[in-house]
Image (tube, rainbow, N blue to C red):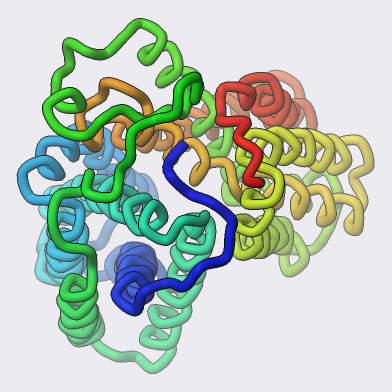
Length: 412
């Protein structure tokens, strides 16, 4: 565990500014691409793409993220999380703004591949800096930052929808957005914490367990110090991270289909499953830091896993509109603190070079997002979507079982 404590204390103005700055980075990381999503139909028409071609091009983004995600530690060690996060956002904004300039499917897909690579690196950098600010704060704040990311995704979608509704030319929309986002990123960089990312770390207490810290410096940068136990813990943390991928995919890919096919709702009502899951997740993240300060990460995550399993189980067992919406909401609420806790634990694994634990956990989370639609889809085709979504129940149970590797530190 880091040196965080729930005890009230005065927070220095520089730390408040740093928290606001890293919150801006989380927000921008979501809003930049979400701003493009409502304009994808315009791009499809402009490039005369089929549905399959558009889907394949968009799939280049997660592919780029998987290819580049594990390169983040080298950049963090060389440049620092503040610089990688802020300037990476400028690169991402420019890459997205360049999409209207592409004249072919190949160029479009290539640019999204670059955008995905940048997004993966930024994701690691923003979390690394968030944990640094958290250590300096002396209490948990990362869940609220992940809530800021979720809010940014909603704002980006609204901005893109408004631009499309006002018939603003795609190039003007995205380049003006890129300019504004880049200025905000530069301003955020000026308020982020200076110096090495290990500055706020303290030596671990004896017997601190799976989340114990190790001294900063050369010891953390030597791969030779990684033990087999650390590797096993990293794999387990990756499985925990992928569990959130399955839970979120239940809403984004299958929620509307389940509501229409199994519950029998109209198209207008069907989309509410996704909304219920996302709103509950944002709410859970907004209060997650206070919950974790009170009960600890292990208990919060394991109880959340049980809530996810019960929630999706309710949606499957009682396929009516009220119960299904409650079930999807409980699914989102249950995993609200999961990824922040997993990334925190991965960042504290002993012996790993700076950024490696975060990078691997983030990479495995993305693998979960890629595998979930295929696995649930195969099961659904072989049986039914109700049976397919049992996979999400199993993901919740997995969190209950494997969540024991997280720190059991009593915040008192």
